[in-house]
Length: 239
Image 1 (cartoon, helix red, strand yellow):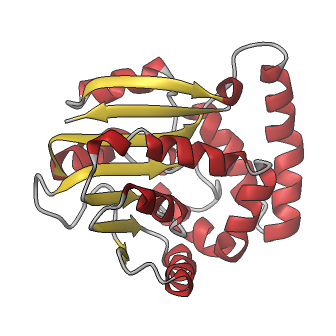
Image 2 (cartoon, one colour):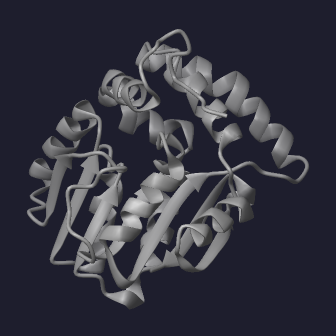
């Protein structure tokens, strides 16, 4: 099932997602940390630590948004990080942030995850934080990332998932469906963005289902690690 941010809009999912993130780009970082109680920062740190022993020199950050995951990846001391996103609004915020912090090893560019403008076997690692569920064609996007990874290169994906155990399952459902959309609408003035979030998480093939998809498109050693009672999941795979 395809979940769209703007259900009455006839535009493609890709176009709608870009429009949505352009709309909320100025409030995105604040809302991300506020609505997750800052736990998203810890999730990113944990995800990046999973690449520490690989010492990647060239990293691709897909659906980079405002660049938080790319900035965290600097702790790996890479030579360069290239972040791509379809939302120019998010990239503009990210560029300002990176310039203010003086991070000259991060380069952000507008590009589509399903049509990456890079040659095969280019990157040592690819990272995606809360972006794969926004792909218009999930398998096509994962295949494109696979194509540009070097043999032996790692993919690290951080994504929301659905808790299965009482009482977290019930608390999570209430928060995502009743609290988050109202707070998101109040701060961002885009009600669709924060109703799309729980809907897209609900529709996403998380856990072992996503691991199976990774394996199906060619990745090896695909694993899933549950984070914070299953609210989020860390997926690691290699080419």
